[in-house]
Length: 233
Image (cartoon, rainbow, N blue to C red; front, side):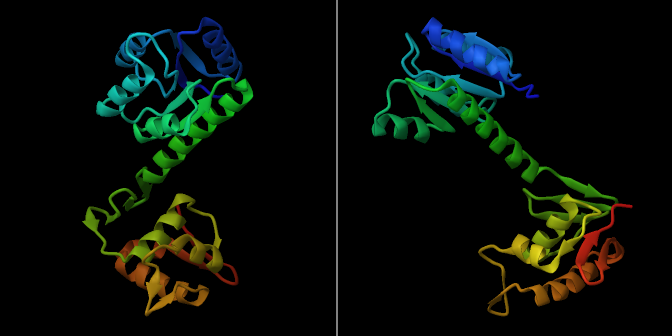
C-alpha cells in the first residue's frame, strides 16, 4: 500500500473532499488546504511527497505557489500535479514550464487523477533509484557522478564499461545474457571502433572491465552458454 504524503490545495470544498477521499482510499496520507498561503506554510512545516495544486486560488494563486516551490532549494524537488479548470494550451504550457510534473483539467475523473499521481510518484522513485549509490563488497558505483571506486581508488572506465558494470551491479547474482547487456549499454557514445556494441564485443569489454577493476574484477563471473553475472558474496 502507498504511504506517501500528499498535499492537496483547492479552494472548492467539494473538490478538496473528493480528491482527499480518493487518495486516502488508495492508502496515501493527505493534508488538505484551501489557499496558496496555507499550501506554502504546509510545505515549510513538513515537505510532502507530492502536491495536487489548483491554479485558481484566492490570494496567492497556483502558478505563484508553483513558482515559489520550484524556486526554493528545499522544495523544488517536490513533484506538482496541477488540477484546474484553466485548460487552454497556454495554461498547460505555463504550468509545465514552471516545473509542474503533470496537468489535469476539471472536470476530472478521480481514478484518472489518482493514476496520474501514482505515475508521477513512480517516476520520481525510479529516478532516485537510478541515482542511488550501489555497493557490492569492495566496489562502490556512483551513477550520478559516473564514478567507480575499487576500495578507495577510482577506476577509469569507458562509458560502455560503466554501463555494463552498473547494469550487473544493480542485480548482483542475476545472470544476464550478452544481448541483455548489449541493450543495457546502448547510448550516444556506445560505439567501439566505429560500430555499435554487439554481443560478441561484450566479451571484449568484460575482459577490459575485469582488468581495470583489479582484484574486484573476479566479481564478474562467466556463466557458460548464457552470459555474465556479478557475484555478491
